[in-house]
Length: 149
Image (tube, rainbow, N blue to C red; front, side, top):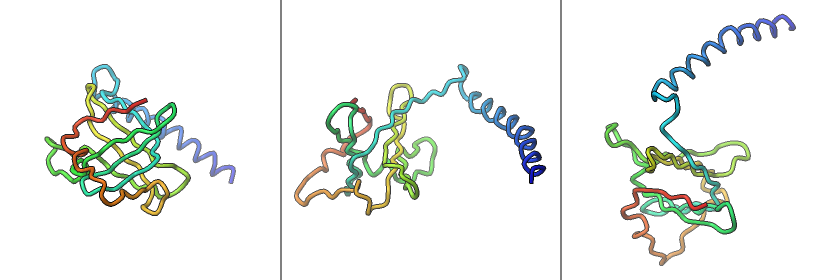
């Protein structure tokens, strides 16, 4: 048993470190400065509301209170060409105690894309929009996401 551990450790050192170095080098080869052109802001989600035109996200600000964002449904639809890529990605959190959150990626100071990490629809973070509440206008023309701190 001790010998198996030793062999595994030697294999990890022999192959793991060079592979990691190659991946790190390839990752930084995309930009001349070696830094990613992206910035990201991540916020915990208090409530997610599904709407016919998109998702209403209620998130907690650093201080007291909450803020709302409106993410249009067309951001999450599959696009085939890379000239007009999808702006939103929806991920279902399946296991563990990870709470829902939103990651907003910025490139050159503008919203590039968002990643919405949610639990299944039975989780208490999912809310219901009451009948008669008209939010259609909130989704029209949304191009940028500004996170209030």
